[in-house]
Length: 81
Picture 1 (cartoon, helix red, strand yellow):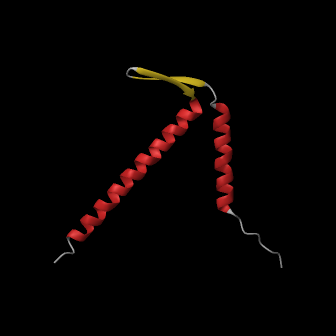
Picture 2 (cartoon, rainbow, N blue to C red):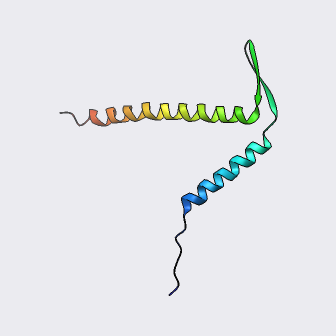
Picture 3 (cartoon, rainbow, N blue to C red):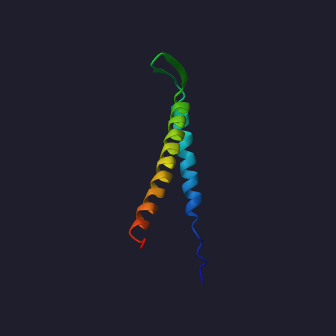
C-alpha cells in the first residue's frame, strides 16, 4: 500500500510569502524623497512600503477591536428584560 505524504500548506504559504517579499525588496531599493507640509525626507522605497504596511495593520487592528466591542453591546440590548 502506498504511503501518502501530508502536504504542509502553511509551510508552502510562508515560503511563498518570503519569496514575494525578497523579490519586492530587490526591486525597490531606490531612494525616494517624501514631502509633507514643511519637511522632506529621503528613504529607501522598501522602507516606505514597510512603514505603510505596519501603519495599515495597526489602524486595521484598532478599528476591528473597537468595532467588535460595539457589536457585542448592540447584540445584548434586545436580550435585557
